[in-house]
Image (tube, rainbow, N blue to C red):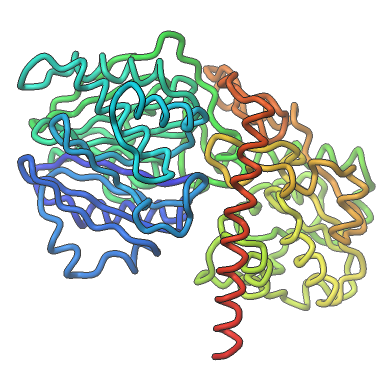
Length: 502
């Protein structure tokens, strides 16, 4: 999961891209990058860290130009600690291409070998984004006949990318001297939207509508699955469907957790989707246990709030804020390493004792992935004086690896992969555990946009929509993940030791 943005304007875009990345910071906290362009010359700043840390005044002054793009990174492939794998990526031929990418290529290893053996292109990192930009560059070289490059040639290259690349990808690229190109995978797994031209003639493409609205732009529509959009340097917009059989199947986890509630994705309000999940979860709870056993409903901040409010309303119980969140600690789901993730729960949340003391409390979370966070929070509720602690998840059990850009790629990490609901309850330490139903979740969210063909919900139902994922792929991912975790845990121990010494 990453956040991407691209802008073409009649005035400098560095501050605008910076502001958009701040609005997308929830999509990635590991690294950030911005590229701007003047003529055919690129200016780049990227590094590990949050947006506010990566870009200082001197960096912003060194990013001139009226066209540019940016990304906030949350690594799910490649080396999480490598600065060189921060995006954007650049290739100098043909034309000069700079690219940012949100998603995960499921056939990246095969493509990497193909690039070396057939296309004669060298890949220097483990990043699938470097693979993707080189595939695009190669296909663009084949499609382009002469200068200037035409929209038809660009769309021909994107169609070839769709034929070669598998997985999830939302892409924004700058073609030096020509303009901005954006496209989305044929299943529409990862989100991508673009704006109407504003009074200044600016056009913006971004991962979420909140990045448009928060910077003074109006949402036009989503980029369709398989569609490519080319905005030339004069601000003219060219669009074409470049996939043979596009089908709209957005990632369900965007609505469960990843996206901001004030965003609209593929015609669906994220906030309304979470309200609907709360309504469905309430029905599930009523069929599982008597609501009379519950004194108060408390959300686990922040993504679960809409679901918790709707559930409380549905069962007729008071909704209370029982945890105060420290907003200066990152989202634990997207923190690398179990030790740091577990330690950060206590740093991030503090219980309000009066809401727990002597009560039977129903905690509502958006999802339960690894279970370590839930375990800590249930224990915090007990320490705050709760009589009984029940836990409800607005999402179904996460039982399967995700290969499309969410940090849950191996079964070893998933608490629900090989455990029954009762075994999960015992591990977490709750007095009762209620999960959302998979089919009910799809039904209540899908009802908000009948044009959807379905959802990419593989982490819940085990169905991989691209149809190219095998058991051997999971074995490879698991081996790579173990190596990554060894590095992460070693880094975690080092950080914790330094903190202890301090």
